[in-house]
Image (cartoon, rainbow over all chains, first blue to last red; front, side, top):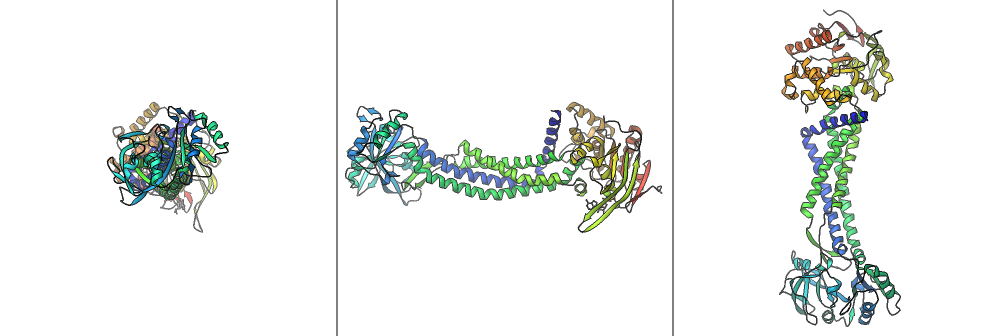
Length: 399
Length: 235
Ligand SMILES: Nc1ncnc2c1ncn2[C@@H]1O[C@H](COP(=O)(O)OP(=O)(O)O)[C@@H](O)[C@H]1O
Ligand SMILES: [Mg+2]
């Protein structure tokens, strides 16, 4: 016990000299801190993009939300359901039944071209035709400006994210649908979900404008309880009149965003990984400098009887301390500059713009700081071993 | 506070020591079949021209380096029997070092510098403070306890170095050119101090020097030349 305590005291004091002498080597220490801060800032901000995208696509969807598509369709774009099919789906057991019938909305999903506010160039904006039940199926949906569109009229409402990303999207404005200009009568929010990037109208009106006859692409439903999923699914998949697939909406959206988030994650780790290699060399260089600047000091301590272990640990702690400072700075920068920063991107599954906010989550901050710590340890280990191996007698001869 | 050393036999026994350094492909024989016995209570001056191996010999006696051949025993204990780790602990308990360039930690004040070797002991904070105060008192620097090395003269820094060397009450005080970087007046002060430590406190001291003025203060002087010692009297 006493021996261990004594050892800690040794390590603490040797470490203290190292840390106290950093100001004399601030140039090289600073370079290493900045290098590591850069790695962590890039890692955390790029990954926060994927996290934000994932959160927008699936994080906000409740477990009782289901989607039904034609079997084999892996996105709404390539799915197709006739009106009789959508009625069969709505009548299946498991959905909530309101006063106007089951909570199921047969929907149509098309792409319209609208100019992006930031660049002025046309981008694909998702437009959704819905049935009355849509507003109860998505019970988080709220009008934040104007009013809901009227069924049977050529009117649209736009999500908050769409309103801010695309030019001319305010109440009183118009958007071009097919050959006509349809008035915008309201703006809605949807608890941060991807629906906020969409333009909504009456499904029947949209069928007319796009010559879709009486077909839909998906049915969105709300389960009586999250546990009713299997009952609902089994009744549809065993119905010989239907050839459909049933998924929880959260799972479906997750799969819709998987390609994108995976690509961003991979990119982030690749870039940050390359930078990390550079930062490891920076840290190595800094700690080799530190050890050589402190050669006589270390040799003196060893002459006085301080052990090798305390020298190794002190160099490691110093390296780790610099790395953690860099990590904290990088994480803080990523948080300050990117958390909540809104952007939009093409979602490859729907070929339309999705607006989302970078999400610098605590888990990402921990990940960034863990990277910093690893860089610090790897950058410290070789110099630490060199310091411990210094032959005392010849190190003392150095001025 | 240290275990008593054997009274029979010399405190320091350097027996047939040879030290060879390799420089490139060349072997440098610095010490050859060297014998030296130092009794407890001695104040020995080790003289010789620059590069003759004085520091090398002192380092071997202090357990900072190991001989190529032969053995060094201190208080009857053979140093070649100790592992590097045990040797570090042994140095902490038995040896006080005083360096030509003081080797103080620039980021620590005088009392913290003096306290350093005590961090390797089991002493409590209060006990450490007491020992530090006593050591600073002994070198006449109590009033400079809170001062940092860079604010002190060379003579004062060397006094701090000596206080650090004696604070653990070591078996042996090893000084490598302790006045080598000081002017005559400051050097004399340091020599007075070493002499007092030897006479009044019974410290065994081995002092490397090439200055006859310094060696004159010692009880005995040995000369190192061509790797061997000769005990001729100093002029
Ligand atoms: N670690 C070492 N490696 C190689 N040569 C050394 C080493 N230490 C000392 N020497 C050589 O040994 C000789 C004696 O050195 P030293 O003991 O420092 O002499 P002194 O202290 O008497 O001036 C010198 O030639 C020196 O270059
Ligand atoms: Mg020398």
